[in-house]
Image 1 (cartoon, rainbow, N blue to C red):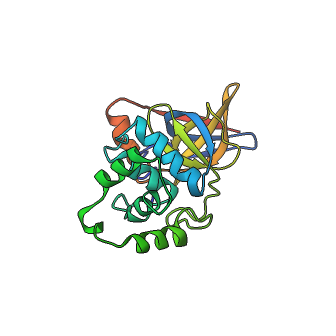
Image 2: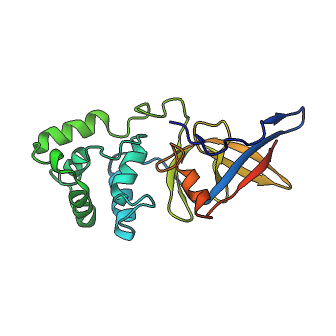
Length: 217
């Protein structure tokens, strides 16, 4: 993964002084909501609530698939959703009809046909384990966030609503910055499906963001 890959070719080199760092980057969206990373039934309830309000993610994939990929810290948008579906329709689990429908709609044909027991076992074995981070195991992602215009992600504790999701030159992951007076401070790296592999270049090209120089303290 390389969030800044190919975006800032030709930009000035990063400047480091004893007071600040000047680095080229672009702003993507402001953070709107911060939530603790849920587990167990809370995780299923969050999926139900969010998917009942939105069906498609900003990248065009089903929203429920984007949420599942985010919590599994994977950019593999063909992730098998059967373990989640099995958890939702497991014995004694009721009250998630919208989520069940969304999951069934988002399932890939090759993932149908597995037994309910297999799905529940996979869920119990792997889903939302604190250290199960296939593509971002070095990021201390401890909170879930939603940006104002649709992106969702995982960020370090300390992230707040109003922080800015940015792509910075030389950074392999999107970064959260916080504006303080006339400069920015670094909140930390984050995992954001749809911004992990240079996709911000298209955002700039269509005029939804612009390249600028950030003064980091």
